[in-house]
Image 1 (cartoon, rainbow, N blue to C red):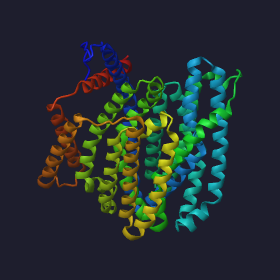
Image 2: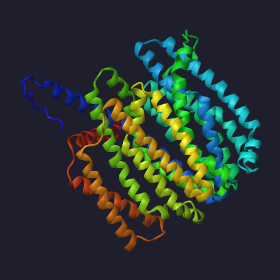
Image 3: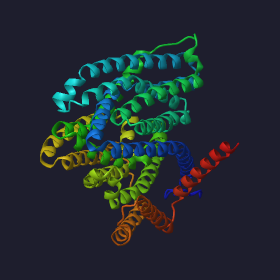
Image 4: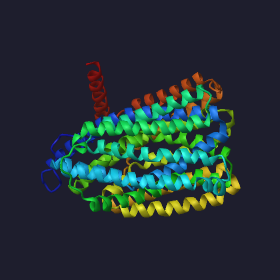
Length: 527
């Protein structure tokens, strides 16, 4: 793909622009890989701590109490998205623009405006949720014990909003270490430690909920500390220039897109809580949380890919953008595929980690994991639509799929229970990502797939066959050590098969960039 030879077209014109283009793509690929190396470290720590927390919650609380916890986080998650009003996206955009221009007054005005608006909105939503918690718990979910759960979760809402705002500010200054430090390292680890300590003291559901609250308070405080370190002017008496209308005009459409997608994510739990029992929600949530861990590579690459899309598109560098789209999508799919294979083969063993009462959710895990594989396999199509000015189209996508998902849940849950909820969500997620893929192909004329996908697909098929054989013959055990060993064997098989087929040039570039980034990080730590 990356060739430095000078070529000529059939009409004899010089094609040195292809050399420049290839060098540009190579540089962009290195930048994506290096930036993704930073976020990958944070993501893997955050997801490991979060997954460990949910395993601990499942084993200690059991399906019923864990279901109440899941309902509480679902309602709070929707309230959190409403409270932020999309301002996190506005902060990233405008603070980055003003910082680049050296306009500290507008940077200060933007962050102060966002802090004031989000604080007021979060306090309003907190009050509403606190007052109506009893009605929501008893009339909608038919779970009286959920009342106090929702009230404590509502108190955490303003702090999680402030944590998100300050982390977005760090991202706008390209301080990814600070952003990842708050969101994916400090918060989940502190939450896990607090809940674990509370369980040791004998507290159960109350310990889990207060651990959520306290970790939010501490994380918000750390976010403000980093913001002061990055931009001391925000806390000084220096001049601030406010452009609230401009900030809101950009943020509110992004808020509508975000809330529609978030509702799509939480609809299954909400509808399952309405039609079913708290124990159903607990089992379903364990499967859903596990499947969601498969998005680690997609979220890692998207963090770096997102700002590049707007830059390349507005500079009319569509060939470079398309090639970068192909590279990112192929890497995300290639890295996610072995995770899907492991989750599928060891689905019962994985669900057993939450406790014996959760094993019946293994079918749910496979359905939801396949939906996330499709998500990874279509790449950052949503980001392409949003960052190229098609956010209205993506908003319509979200609304249509949200209504479809609600309809599917209403239809399938009363008939099939938790399996119906998983099927509804799986169908909705697969459909929305395929629709986005078609829209990107039609509108932007970009398709991420080519013959290079045959290698990971073939490696995946071979690994799946090997894993099925090993599972049937040797690894039908419940010991955690043997489960982890079996997973490790399959991942090694996949990597070796893929390596034996040969790496593409861009694969070598990405691996080299990752290696240099981690070597640099290790050197700085040792210093």
